[in-house]
Image (cartoon, rainbow, N blue to C red; front, top):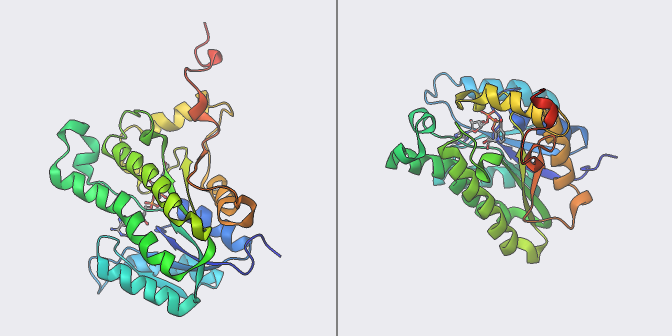
Length: 269
Ligand code: NAD
């Protein structure tokens, strides 16, 4: 019997086996969860590379519901949640592991961000959580659990994180409002603030190498976290181990967020 045996849910944001969503998938599957997946549809439907890649990963786990969904499109979201309901019935959890900012806006100063770049970044990285939760809660059992992924750059200035830092601040605020709105149904909404991990998305962040080096040398545990570490905390937040926890941002970052200055041994005299 796993911690999630008998629970059903959907994971949004798997693109390859470097994805944080993959670390979460492996742990949820190992704990007995029944999983559906959505993926960002390929621009050219005649060459569905993304779908093939995701199917190759999750079909061996027994996943039967692998559904296209561009979170910028309301009709995709409507269709995806209808298909999830048809396939799984009512669900118990949602994993939202999605973010995007146009590269020029991400790499530039925050004050230089274009209006369109700001809109797209906020739409995909923040509004999508609201849009997903709105549809998910209609097919979610009372007592369900929702998680999203954030980063310390939403709380403090992390050079290079730029516009995505503003998105993560808004996302963390959304988690608190959503937790307050859904709490009476005992549906919990939490965020995991992960330390830097090499993925397709993080490779677009200028300064990711420096971030990884900083966590390695400055965090209390003097190590970087892995997608597997995040997956274990996802099991906690999506299972009945955390029934008293909502509106929380749980840092899975080797403790880096508590440091106010580098440890003395990071700069030997
Ligand atoms: P990833 O590239 O593996 O995942 C990002 C996902 O977002 C992809 O599956 C992509 O297809 C999806 N996506 C983008 N636009 C979309 C759209 N319009 N519709 C549907 N899906 C869309 O990268 P990741 O690092 O695993 O990122 C997952 C989450 O974790 C993000 O929210 C990210 O900000 C967060 N996070 C990442 C790190 C890190 O260092 N990698 C640290 C903290 C938080």
